[in-house]
Image (cartoon, rainbow, N blue to C red; front, side, top):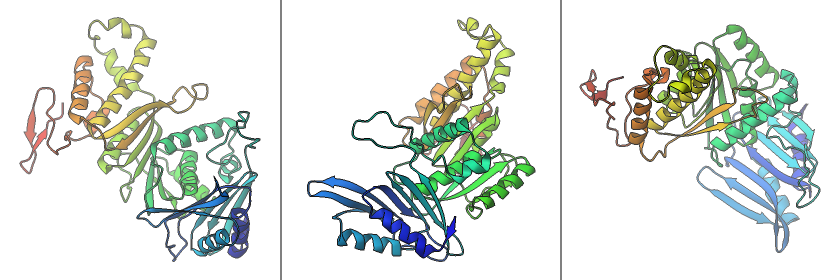
Length: 410
């Protein structure tokens, strides 16, 4: 619903000062105007002196917390925040949720929904599930989502929330979804990040031109065409500028997942979420050669070999990413009753204690099973934490064109 900005902000003010307020976030910027704050978060807190309004503001350097008593102090602080040219407001109360986005024309696009659960008191455990993206969000109506798809979206967003830090960086957050398909998870990530107070700039990549046209039209329908764009191209070659902070690759088939991971490493992306699919490459290599002893029975039956190939492929991917400096978690992101392809590689750049050891573990695995993962062929030599190269299993190195020493690919 589009309304005048002044009227919509009056509604926001009433909710912010209401006893039913549970949480509110202001973030983003309006066209041709920048607020003095990167983000503001409001919530009620119970203190000895009674319930106060807690306001946490961040100007990009450090957060500042104030606890204000009801009445004039809280009202003055709220009015000051409403005067800032924030581009987005997200307000939750015990009975409803309001999302406000300021359009390029200076009007307010407002979405209201009733709360998806009711708190009946402390200790109450019989509550309906609270979703990270409102089940009444216009996205679900636009894509014709059923309950199962809503659950999958929520599971993905929870994995995304667990990957990102509590405080997101100031300024634009660049996101790419490689192999985005019909892009409903692309849009879900965008809507969630906006609600978190981020300024996401999202690029969806898919090889099909008809998907690009469809997704672009959907972005226009949802009012986010300026922040979410789509390009047609392959995962390896599609133009993506600037380099993204967050890389998504959800159910990219077989070695397409490896291509997405390789681009993420090349971009030095801060965060990566990849849900692999269809592990044919390593499975085919295992079929062509005898297994090392005593593991012959492990791959003697076709179904066991296929399942082991899935495990080995993703183990090698995770270990190789660690050798390149990523902390990697391998998790189940949705129950297997919804999809058998429910494994997720969740990676964060930095903080790997011993990259040399990760590389040695990787080499031991590929040498024992005599396989060459696709990801290995797409990545350069593995540097250690000091910037020196880590030799391969045979200790072989070769000079590059500039005379520097690099590791030869196995």
